Length: 288
Image (cartoon, rainbow, N blue to C red; front, top):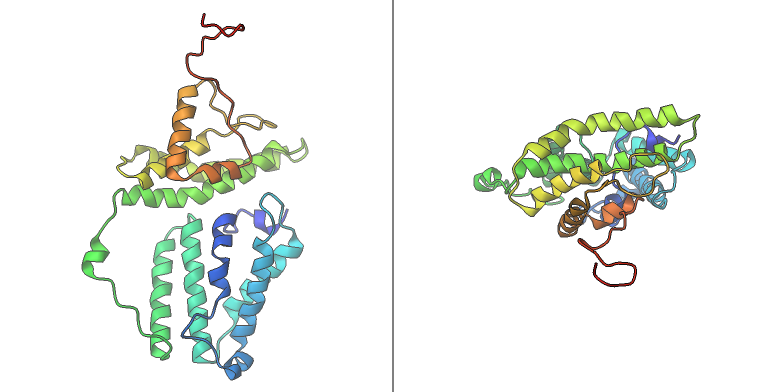
């Protein structure tokens, strides 16, 4: 099993990470570009360059293809090197704090880790201060009290959905491994699937219990529904709606409105083919 499958490793949405590769590859940011001497002498820039290359290879593996240790090991090692390398120049320090900020931002988007938002806020504050004191970029203006206190509709429900979404991706990856597992590996894959299920259940209950008044909140509830229609048996290729055809139609309408069609397709499972409601046409094409 590759390191990408270890349960203690944060598993990110491949699509979300690939979408962010271009911005990550631009480090260090404009306004903190190193001079030729800094780039040569400060070890952080070499460490970041190696990390970018290993990261591109890691997330460049096509979706559905297992990431081998030959690809995963250089990525994790390069990431560890960046975290342990001490910059020796102001530009290098600013580049590292910006890298930390972007990593924390990605973590809060793709992980259910508790306090991920607080970690991002702290890293952003350190980054702004470092760049400002280094003379590389002015401090970002502090958020106003009104902006800080403003809460979007369904704020708590949306936050729950953000924590639940990466678990849906993890669950369906584990579900496919279980569904395709041999008898020899059945117990291991079943245990892994059960572990993710246990992590998801409290969040799902909280989402189901919450009221909803926005499309973003509705999306959180649709994510729970997507989890609950998983195929029930090994080897099945379709989601399980049983005989609830009206629910299937309603679910797909909600999924379309909430922009979940790509996520549904990415699970690798298909929707059951259903006929038109109240189709009483007989074999000769006449209405019975």
